[in-house]
Length: 436
Image (cartoon, rainbow, N blue to C red):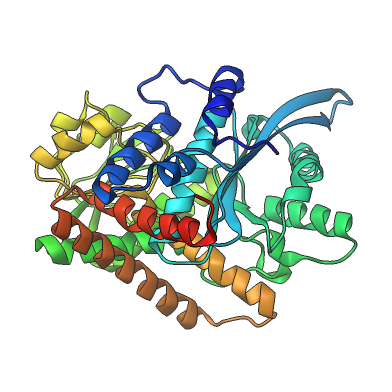
């Protein structure tokens, strides 16, 4: 693994990064750095600590040869970025995506660092990714790819080093294969090397809906803060995978009306509201919302701009930009996805009176329950569902109010307030350890 926090090393990586897009205004890693810069200025952060926190501590680029079902060998590129471990072992998901880039992985690892700090769990941030199209791969090919990845990065993983998890296009089965390969390499079972595992292999109850539950809890707290009655509140959700579908189901239980949904197959709008559990069941069976048979068809652009009280982007980065932000006027924007809003869109949303629940607060439920899973694996003692739900609620509510308090204290946007809370905690750990 290579150190990446010196200015010289920074220039080398900027020139040599696979898949980097450093000239783009919407480059996710540049966005994270700009957001960090804003927080560092308010906190009067020591320049050396600021520079250290601007770059990953370590990153690994790997080449993965995989035997395909037709007998050919295909070469894949993968990454693992360990952004900062001052507060504890690194933690972060692994994404399989055809458009994966190292800068996206760096940004996600940075956001994971701030996310763990914000909900005050003793972990640092990491992220992994493989450039592939899993929709065009068989189960056998995905298993061989997953095991190949662990063979290349396994020396950097472990319960006391870096713990992986599911992310975009990965799931509990892929985590099971990765855990098995790692255990084979070690010569003994180490279930804790990944989280999001099946229950039969040391997974935690409450993990499946954890991110969506965290979204619903922060929406609930935001609604209380701005005086929005959730009974009948209209919700639009972009992205209806695990996070989006559970957010819909849990918010419907709170009294909300899910009026708009969209995914890779298209978008639907129903002013009378969808049956969220029925739509979730349909998506599990068919992988997409297409064919559900309710609602009017919309484009994704029209979906985001549909009338609603709560807008939940739960897809990928850079969906809300300076172009469409002027037409978005929900009472609450709950960022279930990572980096769905570009920095230039934030002041427009603020001018529109939109209360933003920033991504690494809104979607922190997943990593929080993953941490609970790590604790259970370490002690080989497993919690019941009420314990998981109650512990998650306490963490999410405390984090929400820490951000709101900071926003009021410094009179800043909630996104900057979330950075102030998170960065300050990581900076303190760095200072106490004598790193800068």
